[in-house]
Amino acid sequence: MKKILQLSVLGLLLFATACSQKQKELTPAEARQIAKEAYIYAYPMLEHYKMMFAMAMYPESGAYMAPFNVLTNNSELNGPKDTIIVRPNNDTFYSAVWLDLSAQPQILSVPAITGGRYYSFQIIDMYTHNIDYIGSRKTGSKAGAYMFAGPNWEGETPDGINKVIRSEGNYLLALGRTQVFGPDDIENAQAVMSHYTIQSLNAYLGMVETTVIPENPAIPPYNPAHIKDEHFIGYLNALMATGQIHPSEQVLFKRFARIGIQPGKAFHADDYSPEIIEAIRQGIEAGRKAFTEESAKLGVRKNGWQQIAGVFGTRKAMKEKYLTRAAAAYFGLWGNDLEEAFYPETSLDADNEELNGSNHAYILHFDADELPPAKAFWSLTMYKLPEQLLIENEINRYIISSATKGLKYNDDGSLDIYIQTKHPGADKVNNWLPAHDGPFSLQTRIYWPEPSALEPLYAMPAVEKYMLH
Image (cartoon, rainbow, N blue to C red; front, side, top):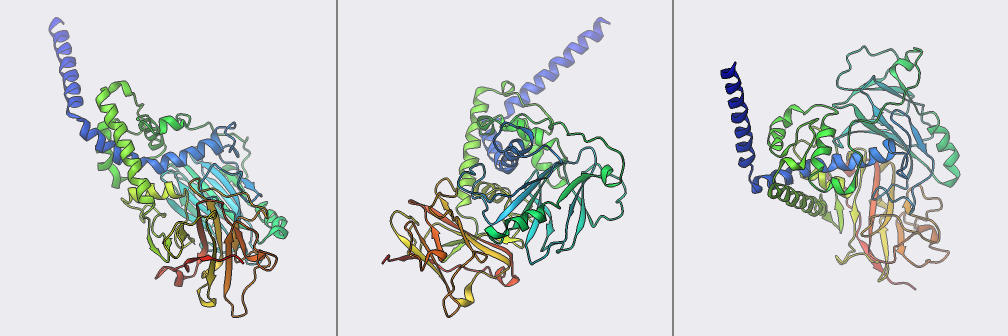
C-alpha cells in the first residue's frame, strides 16, 4: 500500500510538473499572437451576443424585446433615438425572434405578401453567418411555414412545412424586414406583420403544450469591459458550447486552446502569469486595430463610394475570412448577402474630400440610365460620424428612397438629391436629404439588386459640392 501511495504521489508530481512545463512553453509572444487571432475570430460572436443579451436575456437593458421563441414586431421606423446598433435601417419595419432550438424545433409562418411589397427574414447564427433567407427573393410571396432545427434534432418533418433550416448551434436570430411605402402605408405594413407567427413543433402538431419560456443559456451576463480584456475567452468558451466546433476549425481551436479557449471551459485568469495576461491584452488590442483598419478597406472605392461585396454570407462563403467577418461586424452588424441587398457607402465627395455638412452643401445626380438597379427598392441614408447614427432634422427625414413620396425626377428622367443642412426651398424639399452639421457618411441600400448590379458591381455617381443660391 505504501508503495502504491508513493507511486500515486509521484504520478501527481509528474503531472503537475508536466502542466507547469506546458505553461512555461507558452511564451508572451505566442500568447499575444494567439489572442490576436482568437479575438478577431470571436469579435462578431461577441457583438452578436451583446444584442442577444440585450434583446432576449436582460429585460432591464433598454433594448429588450421578448424572451426566446417569442416573435416581436417593431412598427416604428428607426430614428436618432435608436443608438444600440450602428447604421440602423430606416426603410423597413423590423421583426425579430431569437430562437432557442435546444428543446425542439421552432416554426415560422408567413402570409402571402401582395402589392409588390418586399419582405425578408434573414436567418443569422451565432457566428453571424447568414445561413438562409425566407422572403421575396428566396422563397417568393406565397404563404409558407419554415422549420428551424438544431444540431441534435432527428425527428420527421411534418406535413405543411415548406423547408427545414438546420442550424449548427441551438441559437439563431430570425431578423425580418417589411417594406413600408410611406407614412400612409404604415397600417398596411402592420397588417402584414400581424400574420407572422412563431410556434414550437409540438404546438404546430396540435399537441397540448404549456408555454415554457426557455432559461437563459449558460453564458456570462454581457459586460462591456470584460468583452475587451482577457475575459473574452470565457465568453467565447460559453458561446462555443451552444454548438460544436466545425470540422474545418478543429485545428484552429487546438491552437486557441493554448490560452484557455475550449468550448464549455471556465476561464480563470489566475491560471496564467501576469506576463501572459498582459500579452493576451496586447493581442486583443492588436486584433481590434486590425479589424478596425480593415473595416475602412472593405471592398473597393469607385467615385468615392466603398463598394462592399463578399463580407456577409454563409459559412461556405465566409470560410476562413475571419478578419473580413470581424471588420464587417464592426462596420455594421448583420449585413445581408450581396444577392439580398447591396450597400455602397461613402464619406468622400468627388474631390476626395470628407463630407461635412458644416462646410458644404452637396448634390447627388443620377442620369436616367444610372439609377440604382433594384428589383425591390433603393434608399440613401444619412449618418453622423463618428457615431454612425441617424441625426435629428427639421423634417424628420433620414432617408431618400425610390419609395419617397413626391420624389421629383427631371424631364429627362434623371434625378437630383440635395444633401445639405439648410432647407433648400419649396421647389427642392421633396428631394432633400438633411445633412449632419459636421462629418457624415452616406449609405445606399439596394434591396434585391438586379443581377446587372452585381457583375460588375454597380457604381454610384460621385457626390458633388453644390453652390447654394
